[in-house]
Length: 77
Image 1 (cartoon, one colour):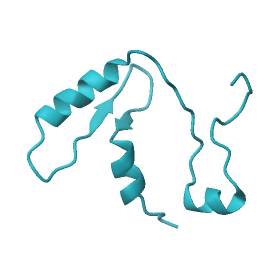
Image 2 (cartoon, helix red, strand yellow):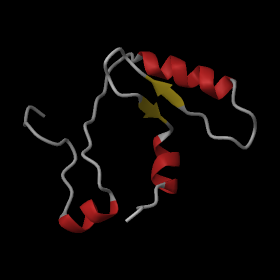
Image 3 (spheres, helix red, strand yellow):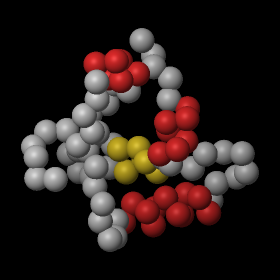
């Protein structure tokens, strides 16, 4: 805590498997959980819920369950 740079430091071998720079946040309340709950409520059985959020002049962001992401991520290289 308090150190600058990436929150999760990866070895060179791990970086090849997980080519992401990970920033971690832990807050008491985050609005995107409400959005995700709405997606879950509207998701048919057998389909993974996903939230796509965008602010003005910013790139869209995708929110999925972390377990789903890490269990299903495949390197495209």
